[in-house]
Structure formats: structure tokens, C-alpha cells
Length: 181
Image (cartoon, rainbow, N blue to C red; front, side, top):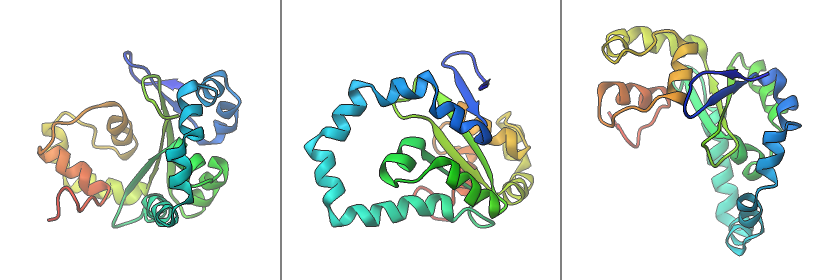
């Protein structure tokens, strides 16, 4: 089912249409039943946070990262656990909702990650336009110039902070905090 992209550590893409099979998989259940996950969900700190007024504001801000994806913000990404545990949303329903807006969804699972994977949403046309405008930055960094391949690199490659490529990636997320210009 998952497609392997890299050797060590292993990163797998889970097709959005097959996410329900992943939810039933041994890897997903193993994570959900892990002591680390149980300790966090059962902790007083977690319960206090969920009961706070700030929690609802935080949830709204998190959801905006995916919901605002479009021409001005080509990419959004959240950990799967954040979507399911914090936002209380169903992955399959979100995939349908975002696809209805014409957006692409990619789901990745990293063997080394402490969360349950990454959920990427992107406007393929807007992202491709931005990549085309910045083709030389990508070529200089030996990065792909095609939107789908760029998403894979974001998930699987590290980038030196402050480089032109880092600035471009921040721009794809409309990250005004790191680079306000």
C-alpha cells in the first residue's frame, strides 16, 4: 500500500484514498496504543489545555493552516495527530472537503516521527506558478521544479535556514513570521 521514498529513515506516502486502510493498519494501532501517546492524552497538562478558553482559538488557527490554502498560500501542513486529536476531525472527511475545493492532499508517514504522519494540502496550480517564478532557486539547490515532487522533498529533505530555498519554502506556506518581506 504505501510507497517508499527514501532509505533511512523511511518515509512512506499513504494515498488519501487508502487512508482508511492505514487507520486499520498495525503501525497506526501501535502508535495509538503506545505508552507515550496514552501518557499525553491522560496527563493533567493535556486535560487543562483542552479545558482552556485558548484551546478553541488555537484549534481555529490550526485549521486555518489547511483551510486557507489557495493562490496566496499554496501549501498547508499539519501532523495527522493534530487533525484527529486536537481538531477532532476525520481524515477521510477532510480529504473530501479539500478535494471539493480543487486542492491536492498528500499524506506521509515517517518511521522516525513521534506523531502519526504529515498531512499536506496544496493548490497545485498556485504552487507550480510560484515554483516556475523561482526556478533558478530550485535548480541551484538541486530541488525539483514540479509541484508534486517539491512536496515530497519538503517532507523528506532538510534545508539550511536562511538560504534562498528556505525563503522560498516559507513563501509557499505564506510564513510571514520567519520572513516578513
